[in-house]
Length: 266
Image (tube, rainbow, N blue to C red; front, side, top):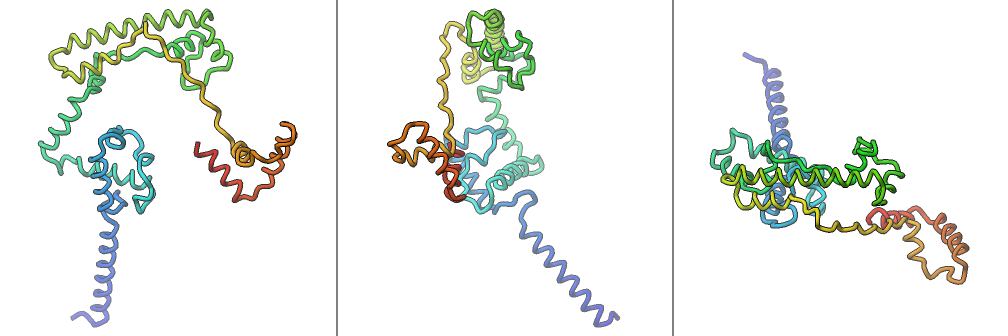
């Protein structure tokens, strides 16, 4: 017969195990750190959204599209939980063939599915990138030298002219390949997929829109001067600038933080 002390130890051990299991259970499903009620509310919100969040690709970040005050956890945790929940929801041992069929229908009837076809043509590089390659700047992931960027604006530049010839040649070939793709797959593509493909064709006769130059972002000092615009009005521009700078340097940390916040939120 076990002694009273052994029975008490076993009882304590069992109690410890039950507490541990309870604590483990309270943590929820592995990988899903947000409350399930919040997760389901988020899913319903996305499902009901006809434009913003609902149309974003799953490869994009979700957190920037959410409002922090709607959740009890940081948005990074919300996004991680949502994507982990999706993995659970699409595990083959937990879904039916009906679910799988609906997912396939939804994806394979969309216009952009054509890009997965092996004979779908790849769009040529832009005129600017064509120009950079002619100039010997082949690593397009690094910023080109200033003199190359400036020379590109000169439409009489020799390299720019050659780039234009190459670009137009490649675009014509690309358009022809798109036409052939449509012809080869005419019976299997739906109207949305055909429209998507035609929209990718480039009209070389269409005038290109000039990019409007973006106004430079204001600094914290610029916002400070704007707030104090009525000050030192009787001084010359140079003397006024010096006065503003002197006053700006004397700002308390909490005051400086206001202007830095304005600058960072442009």
